Length: 98
Image (cartoon, rainbow, N blue to C red; front, top):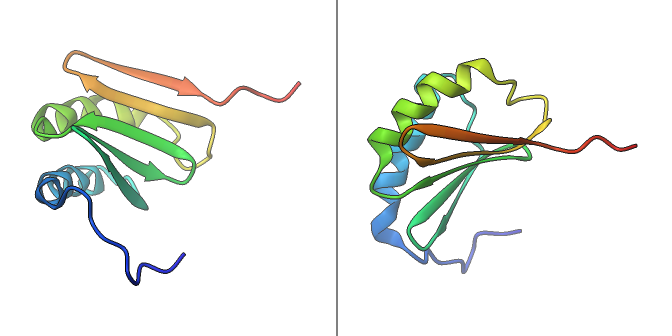
């Protein structure tokens, strides 16, 4: 889909989200896309979504640094990583076809 004519819904949130993306890239996470929904952001790595709360980039980055190195994000087996809670990351894998 062409970005021509598209617009940014929450432009004030972009600098904050870019801080988080920079932290992920320092961890070696290959960020492909960003989606901003209200006060939350989704960062995409293939089919995997990483969700966090905008304005809490530092806390989310800290949780990501302790969680993401132990996950295989490039093999598309993880549906999402939820970093919206300060002390715990929630991870959901895709269900295997039976």
